[in-house]
Length: 85
Image (cartoon, rainbow, N blue to C red):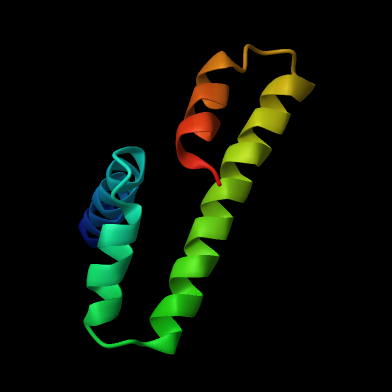
């Protein structure tokens, strides 16, 4: 894996953590409004909605895999409760 790929992955991970942190603190709408104020961009709206949907699906898929293999789901259940729609 190249250094550039690692840096991009790290930046993306930090961005996701920032969004999830805002959502956990109940500040998701504040963040969305600030981002939308930057330009009322329909492409941003579509991308953000797709990102939120993909994140929720990933959490649910992870839980389904844990159930399939008989693993404890308490941690993922807490994450789903905290972050999913």
